[in-house]
Length: 129
Image (cartoon, rainbow, N blue to C red; front, side):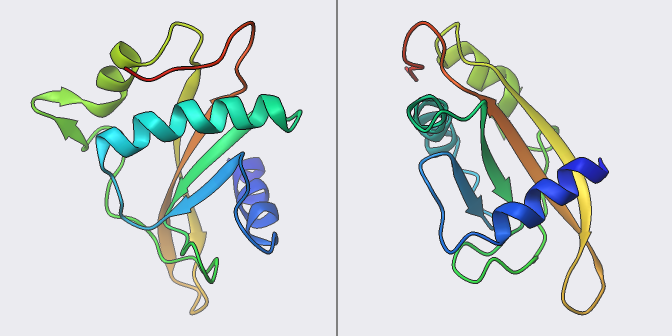
């Protein structure tokens, strides 16, 4: 998990988000996540990156560590875990995985961060619905 903390810190050092990574605070709209998986996977391919990232718990403007309240197990669409729901609605070439890590905020408090690693689109674009 140390590598994920280093990765998040590296992404926080960018001036702004790109077509292969985005920061979220507590925006867990399932439709948005599905659309972003598709867009980020395709963006990673376009930018010649092996992966794209959606990271919750980082302020999208300041890039400060703010933490998040949810993870892939507590998020549900109806009675279904969000990860299962997303896998049903994304194309078969969509590969992604969730990871929960902890990072320190500016006051040195531990905060939960959720990292969604999205592998680049291969052979064809990734689609949602």
